[in-house]
Length: 349
Image 1 (cartoon, one colour):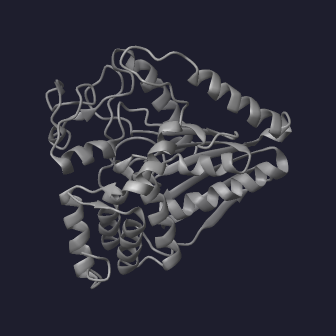
Image 2: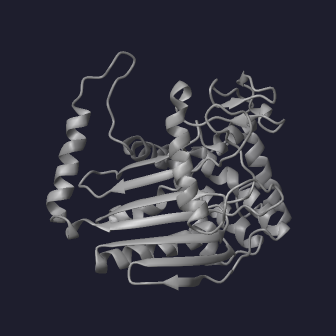
């Protein structure tokens, strides 16, 4: 179970993606986002996903070098067809267009369809926050395989349907919320499988509709649960809204077609704070608000109160120094691909 420097892992991801047909630019963008997820402590969206992307390339489900097409456009709106390109590449470009329009017009919104997995949704609204805008993004997989039951149900009808909102501030780390509307992101179950560990009760039901801590139950016909436990109607309702923004508004539709390509539909928006109040005042007040939250005395079992997004910032600083833990199963998959593409020795395997 090796711990590898982030720089080396990023190079591994980049070289393997190029071996599978991605351009150097595409591979650089994907590896930057993927390793950023590892650094933030979200291993489910990190380098563990690279072999899966390569398999989708081999199956023809991801198209390296795919065209980026603006299908419909107005001063503050854009509709983009990613033509099955890498979701990281398509969504990064789409968010930058949204940011540029919002800076000019005050607000802007974009929908994107026919792109592969976008990874950690936070990366794109954080782009807006760093440009002194409020950023928002939702994502859904359209009619491709579903994994989450509606509240009170026991069969899959929804995706994990993440939502992220990021705020500009003067804080060291961006203040943001990035969350699946299911009890947990689906990739975290994959991490548990790779590491041979149990999962907490409340994440999934087994094929008979009973609570389980066995991550293999999901692939045997089990189903993930909406966020909220006994109050899961809240996560369920939020998930429905995300699906409408990202599935129906984008034109992907809803439902369950497990034979289809993974198709991340996204809605993104950016708001120019200066259109509402001076940005310097807003950023300072958000910073003071975060300090106010952190000044709260910790409850029993807690050592400190963090502002939303602070833990990801702290983990990133730590892992840049200490390296990133990679489970043996993922490391062996990476090694096998490196041998297939003839780059194992140069990548340190």
